[in-house]
Length: 246
Ligand code: ZN
Image 1: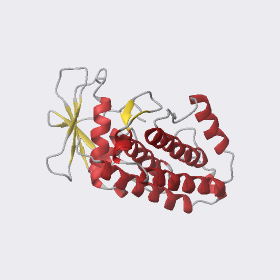
Image 2: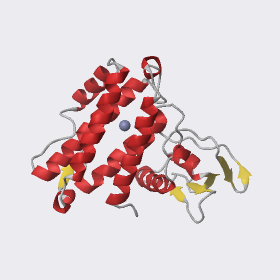
Image 3: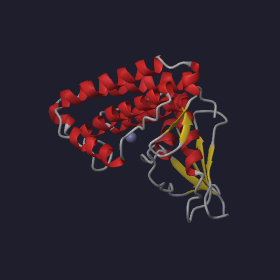
Image 4: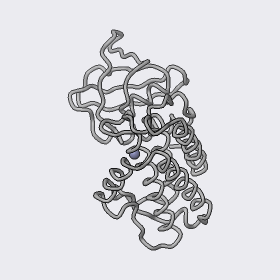
């Protein structure tokens, strides 16, 4: 994987701005409408993003002080905070999002080179250097900017981020071969020499999925298969559905 800490910080800042701009278009009524995530309104999603900024900032505190400071006090608390946020006023949620994002960026600015290398533990229980946390935040703000359903698409996100996200998702998905499926080769048509392989459980001819990088990314992220086509042995075939991700 070629991404650097500087890349991730640049992307986190870009994704934060895209979310902020999208949130600014919402009024109280549209805030309460469904997001693109099943069961969540836009209020749930913005509350989740704000709480996530606070959680990732806890890891920055952990890295700079050495005192274990978990992202969330518990998974129950995390869910309760999102549910409470879904009943808050949209204007308050917009302020919560902006202030927590600013506080997180400031906390990152204050980390020494040594602190960036300090080990911290994510909500999933993974031990990672603090330098991995801007990438964790990047994924949240970029992908959820699309999930807000205000018109942002993966095509609005930087191509180098899309490549890094595909690398990340494929590495995760490759840990469990897709049951009942041959290998799936994903080949963006607008970037030369780039492709990914999702291993399947069946040793038969692979399925090749092609389309723009942005559409390939949406597909890998479990967010639809528009603008894609699939072929197998030079014949058109249905696009395989993928399990949820993130
Ligand atoms: Zn999320």
